[in-house]
Length: 303
Length: 325
Image (cartoon, rainbow over all chains, first blue to last red):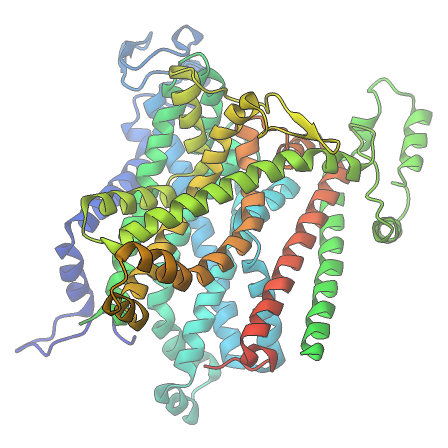
């Protein structure tokens, strides 16, 4: 539980745990490929404005002449639309890259805020104890018994469309998972001798919590974070598909799929299918990386 | 035990009261319902009259008071859009949702448990690896996209199944059901499959993990020693050993499947409660939104209450309120 990897005493200088962790990670080819895909997609999303053949938000570059063309069509811009175009004549590849950017942005923001709030609440409940602990954990457990999608659905319906509103809805739906995990890890750590020892010294409670308790709760939280980021990407796409997430001016992957849905019936499959494939690739890659990290951090699977 | 039941019941009532306040205030904060009730060319006098009739001129706490009072008398108000009692509206849509949810969860359980047991008995066979790959896919792929692909494949390309609607229905005791006609059944296949996929993945994993553990248990060893055939062991002993967690999850997932039905019903234009709530959100039909949310909260509180009681009946440690470490 204390270290990310068991360190064998190396002759000479000690290897930092992160290096050992990476060495073990690399041994699973499947997970390494998934990690590469995740990083590649993150890179592509970050630099979308430089990579995409077209700025899909600049209406002046769009022409309705190019609308709903199949993959491989050479548009009025003079270049090949590799994945075809959508109903507004947008190059689908560009739209997907920009959509990926928004999806990753939203889910990372939601994930980190939910992690911060959840970990704080959970560790606090475990540290303080008493009636505060029971009230906090009752609320968290109650929320966990509700499906996250329902909560996010209702909240984004109430808050309206927009990035900030969507992130709020996702955080509210997901912080409880972090809180439960942090609470579980912190109650286990709380009873250990090193915490008792730290408490016996004149260190402030804050220092004990942040310097000693919290770092040891990190491994399970990292695992939950990867799972939750993947699920918030999926959740965001679902909400946008239902027309509750982002405004039409900022199409995420979910919205692109939703826009293409109307044209699917007439056989123009590409508008929905390609953004969907991108979505699945992203979610699966993150999930596989998360699985590997979980297996590596799980002391029970160690020989 | 009685003290425990009373304590949990009080807790459930408290949660319901808090939920009703949150839902009411939350929904109250969205938009102005007057605009959707009256025509745009209405006079100011008409407008004021409508506001007064809907009670929107009263302070918020008074509106909540009236709402809560009516709620306790089983009156959820009238829908602004359909102009009929909300309870009647939701009640009329409920059979469609129930039919969809029950069929898909049954399918997920029967197929998922069978595949999971197979994968648990023969963990190294190719088919088992395929099954497990399928379950990873079922977890990762967003269900709305699967719905689109199902429509694209079976309705658009192959043209063998309808893409939406309920099809023909048969009325039994005044309630229309789709699954009793061939045409209705063909309409239910795709949405039910779509809704079932996530649960299917979960049932496979549960059954596989349970089976792998059960196969190593003494029960199975002795049954083998007694000369029972593998099929009998699976049917009579393994299935029994793995059934408790599966039944628990089955019950818990019933609620979340109802929630997920919102997505599936929207894709397949299935005229159930989920489609109703999405439509109501887009046109700001407040009474329907509030009623749906309060009823869903009630459903979940009841499920949790029941689960708590069942577990307490099984495990005395929970009854005394002490959780063992």
